[in-house]
Structures are given as structure tokens and as C-alpha cells.
Length: 339
Image (cartoon, rainbow, N blue to C red; front, top):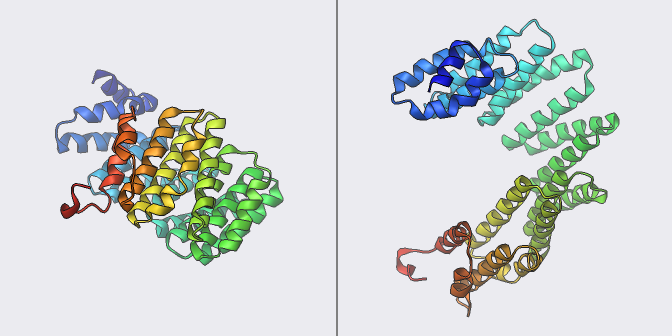
């Protein structure tokens, strides 16, 4: 691919990123890939705005080669490059910590975020300090140190409130609700969700609050309430006409249904999923058919009279049929292959 080679030779970082994926597809040997990585590692130190995006791509390639540490070295070299350059150094530290977080290394992420936190406190940048505290809290939760995560997130939340940063304040409450849910303190988790939903101004936050609310209600065996929360999340995503948000909610709904099928909680599905089908009655016929088919499949799994075949065959979207096929396979052994 000539465009990519020209971009690499001229050190055009933006163009390199634009053509990189296509170029990777035509590489035929590991040696060729490693030679490219060497060139990209040299280039990343000369990029400015695109440096971290390119570092991210390099790290993913090394991760694919089972050599993630080499990819993370690229971030470390950027940290070293900007060591005495104020804000650029803080930015480099943040991206290194973020990379550790992204690649599932919460202990390393915490260590790096704490270095960043110390510098932010010296500079008196309260908003950045609060954001970093929130990141540290999330990584402690990843380490299953949830009480420590709550302690730090509450500090961050108080700072966001004091700063008048409403969006980050609400996000921090959402994280806290999830942490308390993980600890089994459903009352406190519900209080926080109620506070978020009191005067919702941000669709994404409201939608995520509804998803967490559904988890809390399901944990308390309020499955009608859980499906209601998921329905409200779906309808909100439709209201704001955001395809990405809708996809996130639909995936959460499907995963919730799948978990119930895995637990053989078919009754909880067929008694409550009708509200989702009804919600789409005048909006989208295919989604209505899909949720109706899930209801009938749950009845089939329970050994009850059902109209699953009819519901399944009425669906025109192949992807929905594939999702139903996945659900049907759950718990199906060789001996019950004719289910």
C-alpha cells in the first residue's frame, strides 16, 4: 500500500494512523510485522497529537503477539520524553496509567495514577485531582478492594460537587451505586440511583443508571422492576436517537436475559419480558417480535405450551435469529438435542 509507505517515510502520523489497519491486513510474515513495529516505535516519539493513539495501536499489536510489555514500553518512552515538560509530562503519565487500566493491569494503573495525583496536588488542579481519584477508585474495585474504592470515590464525588462539576458528580454517584451493589448494600445503591434520576440532564448517565438499577432490582429478586428499568433505558436511548447508546442498552438487556437462561430462571423471563415487547409495539415491529420470541422460548425451555416456532419464523432480521439460537443452545446437552 503506497499511501501508507509514503506516510511512514514522510512521518505523517495522521496518515499513518489512517492507513495502518489496511496495511496490517496485507502483511504476510511476522518479520515484516516486527520491522513495521520498529519503525512505528521510532515514529511515535516524533508525533504530537497522534502520539498516544499510535502508541495504543502499537500496544495492541504487541498484545496480539503476546508481548504486551513491549507495547507498554512505548508509553514509558513518552513519559521519559516529556519528563521535564509540565503538562505534557502529566498527560504522558495519564496515558500510561490509562493503558495499564485498558490492558487489565489495575495494580500498575494505581501505581501510575498515584504518581500523577501527587503532581496534580502540587499544582493545585482540583478537577484533575478528583478525576484521578475516581480512576484509582475504579481500579481498586477491579482488584476487588471495593471498600477502598468507595472511600476514594466518595472523596472524588465531594470534590466534583464542590467544583460544581455536575456531570462528573453524577458519574461518581453512578460508580458508587455500582460499588455498593457489589457489596450487597442494595438500600444505599438504590438511594444513589434515585438521586441521579431525580433531575436527569444527561441521557448517557440516565441510561447507565437504569442499567445499574436493573442489576440492583434483580439481586433483590424484583424481576418485574428489573425489566421495567431496562425498558426505560431502551426507550430513553430511542428518545435521544443515539444508535451507540441504544446498542449498549440492548446488549445489557440481552446479557441479562442470557444470565437468566443460564440460571434456568425461565419463569422470570416469560412473566416479565412482555413489557419490553409492548414498548416496541408502535415503534419497531422487529424488536417487538424478538422480545415476543424470547418469551415463547422461555416457555419452551420450561416445558410449557408455546408458540416459539411461529414467533421465530416471523422474524426478518437474521441477527435476531442468531441471538435466539444462542439462547436456545443454553443448557442443551447431547441427550436433549431435539429441544
